[in-house]
Image (cartoon, rainbow, N blue to C red; front, side, top):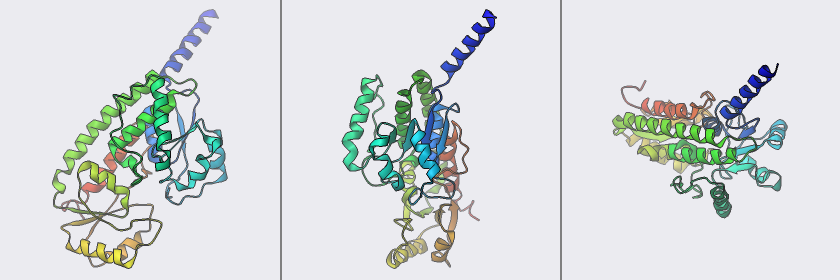
Length: 312
């Protein structure tokens, strides 16, 4: 009997060492954030996501059950006030202070974000070697997760937050983050190489969610159909986009599954435009530690369908 107890103790000890975060309740606002949590924490952590398939974080209405899930969460990850506006009032209150981690602060919160990192410095994290090279508080485009290097910054923030939870294993979290960084950089180089033949293709996007991805990979984005997906664009803007589409070389419109397809088909009627669909919310990507890497590739695959030889 003592030998059995000893073996059980050893097994439980090994399990604790292999588990980055023990019995943690994590809530993510959107699927891409969930994928980044999985990359850092692994499959041992269950993550619930607020915005369901087919919905947009720009105008989502939360259910009472999701409100209760937030109350029970150990940590909540969301992009920030300029993205998931439905969470602003709730997560900005005292009830969730210390449990809600925003990756993109509003301009008025920048000092708080700096204090957040100062606290981590005192906990022994080497932020000098992991300095953020992007300004998360520029107030411009909140779709930061589509840029792989900004996503890496988000993953580092996730690591920091999870490492402070009770029962956390910082060494395993660091190992997971290091592996994710290596895989992400390799994928980024592969994707960049695959875009070599896109020089003669004119890319257009439904709204500005694609902008940061295009900028990171050096793609030329000729136009955006709507500046705000919650509002119908004005006649002048539509006429301007139609003129650009008509004058473009191999125009390709990157659409999104969260929004009405008939709207953009009506304004491109009669024009020789290639359509390809990408999903900034990664709905069809399986929630695994490699999910974010697969998300990056899925966007690349959608862009590559714009090549003339791929167009249908």
